[in-house]
Image 1 (cartoon, rainbow, N blue to C red):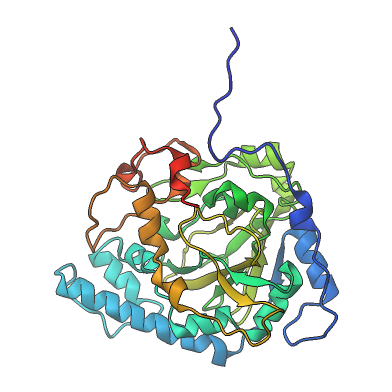
Image 2: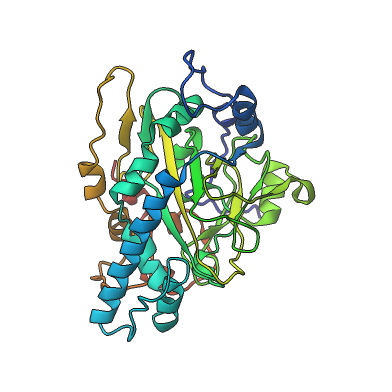
Length: 369
C-alpha cells in the first residue's frame, strides 16, 4: 500500500537561487556608506557579510539610552503590578533586566514583544549611509520590513537563544522569492561568550526553504534540524559554520535564506542587539497580510519623508497573536508569544506558548491579504 508523505504549509518544492545570489544593478553614483564591490560579492556569494566598523558612538549610544528608558518603564509596570519588589535602579543597562528577570521570569519576553520603536531606533533604521548600502543589495526602491526586533539576550536564558533557522521559516511562502537583507546590530561587543551569531556560509545558494519544526524548548522559535540542512542545502557543517563576532559599531548582514543561529549567552552581562530588515518596496513582505512594510526610499519621490505613524500604529505581536490564538484576552503580564509561523511546520514539541494556539484554525485563513 502506498503512502503519501505529510506536507506542511511551509513546504515548497520550488527554488529561487538567483534571488539570493545575483546582486541588482549597482548605483553609478558613489555615496557615503556604500560597500566595496568585493563586499557586495561576498554578501551574495557567502550569504552574509561582517562590517566591523559602520556606526559611530553618536549614532548608537542614543539607542542604549532608549533601551534604558524601556527597561525603566517595564520595571515600573512590574513593580506597580506587584510582580517585583525592587526596581533595581542602581543597576546598569547590561545587568538590570537580569535582576528583574530573576524576580519575574519572562520579563525579557514582555520587553521583546512590546515592539516599541523609539526615535533613536528609527534614526538607525533609516540612516542615510545605511540605506545607501541597502540600495546595493535590493535596489533603489527600499522598504523597511514589518519584522524588526530588539533582542533582550539575558545570560543563560533559552528564551533569548535562537536555534538554527532561515528567516523565511517565520514568514509566509511569498518570502521565499524575495530578498530581505537583515542588519544585526549589537549594542556592545558581541562575542562567542555572550552569544554572537553563527551562519552556515553558502546555505542560501540553492534558494530553497528547508523544513523546520516547532517549537524549540520552552520557546516560540522554529528550528531547522542539522540533518535537514545537510539534505536539502548540501552544506558541510564541519566546514561551513562560521562564527560572527561583531564589535560595537559594526553589524552582521545576512539574507533571509541563510541558516543562522545565536549562541547561548554564557557571560554575566546582557547582550542587547537590534535586527532591522529591508526589501524592494514593490515586492510582498510575506507577513501573512498582518502588517505592511514602510517605504523608506523611492527614486520617483526624491523628497519623500518617511511616515512612521501608520507603521508603528500596527502592533505586530498583537496581530500575530490574534491571527492564531484561541480568542482569549491577554493578560498584560503574559510572557508567551504566538504567531502564524507556529502552524507552518510540524509541531513536534508543545509548551506554554503553543498551548494558546488554536490548532483548529486553517493556516490558509491566517493570510488576510
